[in-house]
Length: 365
Image 1 (cartoon, rainbow, N blue to C red):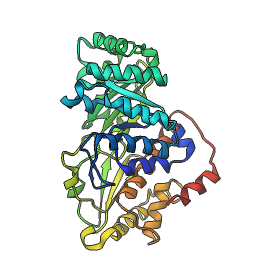
Image 2 (image 1 turned 120 degrees about the vertical axis):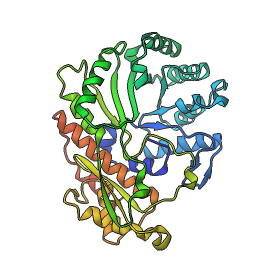
Image 3 (image 1 turned 90 degrees about the vertical axis):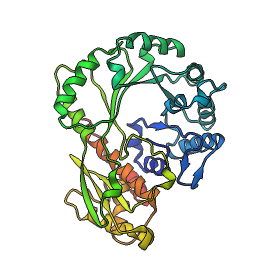
Image 4 (image 1 turned 30 degrees about the horizontal axis):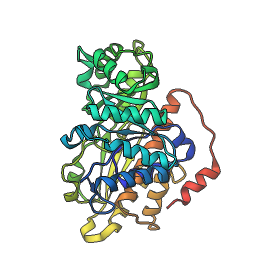
């Protein structure tokens, strides 16, 4: 998930049992990233303090994975000492939070040293991220050994993330067949604490959706996971992960992007992007038509299902309006609740309904 206020608010509105059953994987904010909440670019110190504060407040001190690869894409930080990620981790630790650093198979020396120190302090292990190209690298085993040795752990103390990024999935069964073969060749496959695959298929073309209309979208990542788990030749069970209701890529100039009044609503086999009127003409009240389209949809789950569903119903009834961050938070909560329900159903896991917790979520507006 990206460093946006709506994502953190959405996570905080999940029922406790749902948040307990997931491990958020968060991108670290970078200096000069645009912050939509403050409507300006943040300094490195502001990024670090805001990240720690949000983590503590909205995740209620649960662990989270933090993605550090963007620092290795910036020449300024490849040799930084001390490395910024150490300060991110230390500020979070002082607020009672535990972060698990995620690194690629070819991290810079400065990042490796910093991650080693974080692992020593937090006893947290790491997440090792593999891209599609890494799976085809003949030197993958050597690179994995170098990374693990550099941070001072073995595969059993780490999780493996196979990150396909933005990926178009036309035939899930064909992709699952190829991926199963590649997974089998991963070094130390049976030793990793967990192996999870993440892929994002959410479009960036929301701006092209007309006012007061609804567009259906596919959930290629979920269909791929179902296809993978149905294969008898899958060498080990993999954990489901996705990019939520967001495209995996970062916009170059998000400060120039204009917010639109829309909700993103996850369904069993797809999703909806429901767009309301023009914010320029109607202000945030433009969102009401988007909410009404979802409430009138045959697969709307009712206000008791999640914070997102309850919030959308209130907007539809004219009892709330919100703002772009809360519209996003509604989609995040709905998506996480629906996805957890599907994963639990796949593996026959049941959880008791907590009426008090449900009531608490409905009151969090």
